[in-house]
Length: 279
Ligand code: SF4
Ligand code: SF4
Image 1 (tube, rainbow, N blue to C red):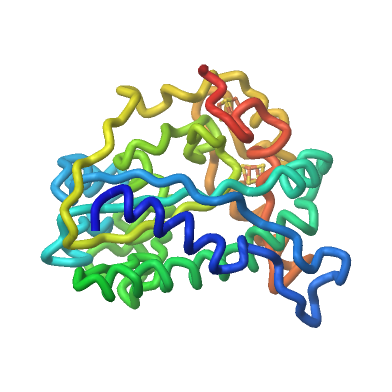
Image 2 (cartoon, protein in one colour; image 1 turned 90 degrees about the vertical axis):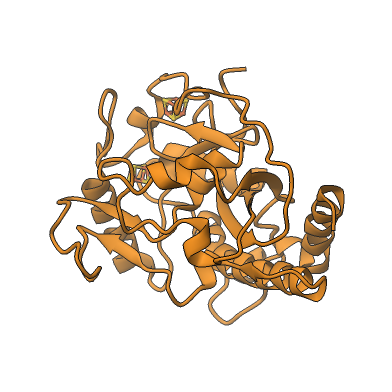
């Protein structure tokens, strides 16, 4: 498969998978059944040998628990990252909120992630059918979230106040040329910050996409709109996001809306919501 065929496959699968329409279920408000959660994904390619993957292992960048592409798949040649932009209808609903996420936003967070899980399995299956090998880190049993190094052998209490995982989709997307970080710590793509990422690691070799940026925050205009939007003061105009305050807000959302949760107020009603504001 060449790069064009992969891109055609990605777009074809989006249609085959029902364009992310919210399925009917007992606890989905009927008026939202069929609501489209995401637009078609955009895609970026990177070499599995890109030196930034090793840099991510350094304490203070991500940490030594972050696995490189060849730890996920020893024969890896390429990382393919996808960004699924949240649809305008859902972004608008969240932008109208001041305290808690809108219901459609919660659907995009939870049912949307389930859609992406199904989508990535279908994508991986197509890659396998072509004779290539593939790993989907976020669906791999080795994937693990990391909080203060807890539960990670050798890293317990090593780095206080650390939140992360064995594989950061945002950091992979940065290497794949999809965008740069914002003050709110999301990744701002050419289709904005409001959306979700996924990736595969494969032994198929492709030319990496150029990264049209040099700085980690190139697309963020430091406007501070996300600081104002955050209902709990989790974003400092200089230091960026405090993950502890943010996660407490998400815990409260879980208490109110379980099994769903979410917030994303800092990703909606802001200049980087659906575009690169530096352009
Ligand atoms: S709202 Fe402004 S400061 Fe915050 S991430 Fe977006 S561009 Fe950067
Ligand atoms: S930083 Fe966290 S709590 Fe604040 S708006 Fe963003 S998601 Fe919500």
